[in-house]
Image 1 (cartoon, rainbow, N blue to C red):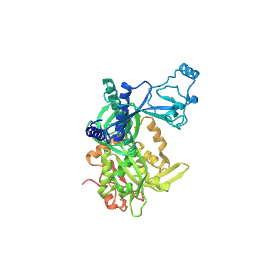
Image 2: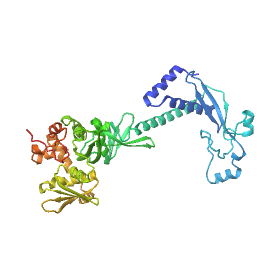
Image 3: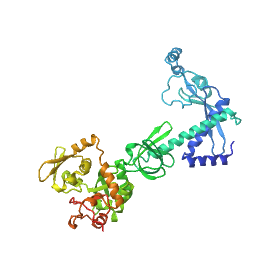
Image 4: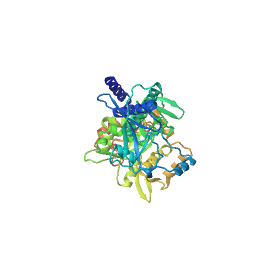
Length: 464
């Protein structure tokens, strides 16, 4: 018998601190007690089981033997062949007996019993079934047996804790979680996630961000894997889906399904484009993402360290969608044919359509899935293609690196990059969506491009 009150209190404490179900803890204690019993009173090869009665605090202990017949026993020739092949019998395995068709075994009287002998004890028992024998319970285990029990409990509790952590975070894959920078080791950043540690690889960082121990951040949970020392949890700040998950948290219409993010292209730390559509009449998808006075999109921008975000309207018409995707440039004409899009813009719109280091057309190509050729209206010649830009990046041009740095400086000064280098748009050029007031007020905020159904760009007003 055990002190049931203190025993159950200890189990409850482990359950709360480690997040391990009570049933799993009791099962672990039963296995430990069986191992301790076998150490002091058992024989080699025995299968010993125990059962704890959580109501009375008493234990029941028994031995199991597999019922076999002559066809289930390996011959001397088979045993000799296995020994030559280096296969040894594992008598110490505490496995559950096979429930399917019995396989051949090396007979061990501590683990097996012939069917005739078994039927003398229990009538009607068949080969492959298990016969149990009650054992006398002893509570005076020796020091070695007690140490064995302790080791079994520690090991099993640790394994159960790791499994509980794995299952908890496996359910959070593809979601946003919170973490605190714990330490930085070379290319790896380790985050304290509360119950465990997550690791961020170099490719998952936002280039312009600085990571310092103690800084609290939102993270995108990429994957959870089994590792030799427990679950390996991989997190990211640069993953494209982090942007969509942040919008889901900030925009209730996306969470409810009224607004959907149909496509997304991201260059972390520099610029992103998202295409949105509405599934309910009267719901403006762009206005919903922007929020009143731009509060929703501003929260996403702030979380991503000032990353610029273009919010455009999704269209099933490929030409219209491509024209929208090239915002803030005004597209005069877009023609699609055989996987390519030929987009014509005015001379003064070429730089906007292409973007610094080709970033705008590169993101538009990722967003739409089309190869895009930018054509000047005045010359009729192709000025830039998305393939040429991709080739330049492959040769070592870091996409958006310079623009990201400039954007960060502009944010610090309270101006967007466009506001620093372009004239403000006229009142006629402003968006005319259902959320015009919110969009107009937010136009002064840096780092956001908002486009309406007519692909009219929103330019920031002059600083007063």
